[in-house]
Length: 220
Image (cartoon, rainbow, N blue to C red; front, side, top):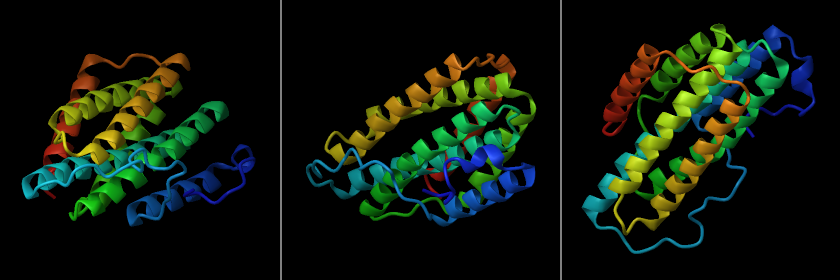
């Protein structure tokens, strides 16, 4: 777990303590100090060997997915930091903990494919933290709406990766499929918690930001 704190402690934290905890979480995320709580869905078998071109494609796609999970940590941490409701804050924190699994799985797969994670991780984290902060300051219902829209877009993004990943890369495909299921559940949970739909221009801005991130992280 990234934040080494007793589970009962968050209800007693004041704003300063929450800020320090959030900063600590961010530093650990950027430095790669995290461990999955669940075993990788790909542990059942490696599948057939990939040729060089297949490995390059899978490596690039999994690097993009790793960046997406870096952003997810920043979004959930910032939204938890500025949430006005304690129960909702715990919802965001719990979702962030579940997303650590995705972060660890994708990093491990990138390493297995003999390539690098994005060299712009601090930039991705900082940018996503700003987006999450704005969502949090807009109010809890809109913040939840931001979660719903983010997770729906991520779910679509992962579905496109399942179309693009080499059929032989069963390891990456198993990871992405599990991530897709988890993201759909997070969106459903946020919707059930009372999310307010976002205005169309905001959704469009989110898609544009995601496209820039995807195209850049594919290479850098």
